[in-house]
Amino acid sequence: MTIPSVVWFIFTHIKKRFGINADLIYTLKTEANGFEFGDTLNYDIAFGYRVLPEVYETYPAKHLNMFLEFNGQLNQKNKQNDKRVDDSGRNTIFLAPGIQFIPARNFLIEASFQKPIYEDTRGDQLDTDYSFNIGFRWLLF
Image (tube, rainbow, N blue to C red; front, side, top):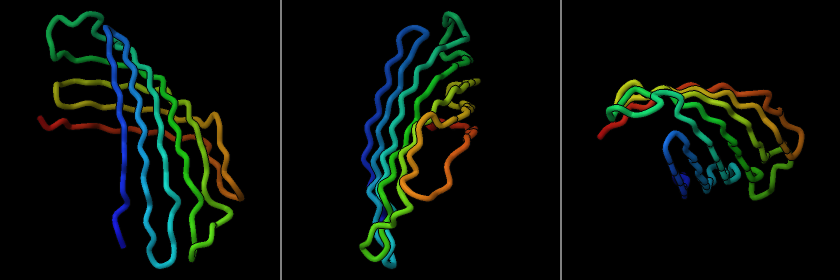
């Protein structure tokens, strides 16, 4: 078994209270025991707005951000013994409003709700109703 390879591109631009973030992440999957999951491409674009503080008086300062994201995932078909699995692979695009709170320079909490606005399941598969994500980041620097 080998480890999948990942290639990514990330872009961020912030001006005053507005920001835009985008990324592309491609994962090459490998084969084990005659089965190979399809490669995946994740693509995201997020538009952000800093709600608080209106103006930075000191930095770092606690702040609250709102986001509107478009997240997508394209999965290639899986293979079993070098043959494509018909009911596999998908392309899903989500609309995802989110919130982010940064209480300290090196810690943040965030949450988003993802609702599919487009989904091609490529065969007989379960579709996605929605997804709710919550997380935190502890920045080490």
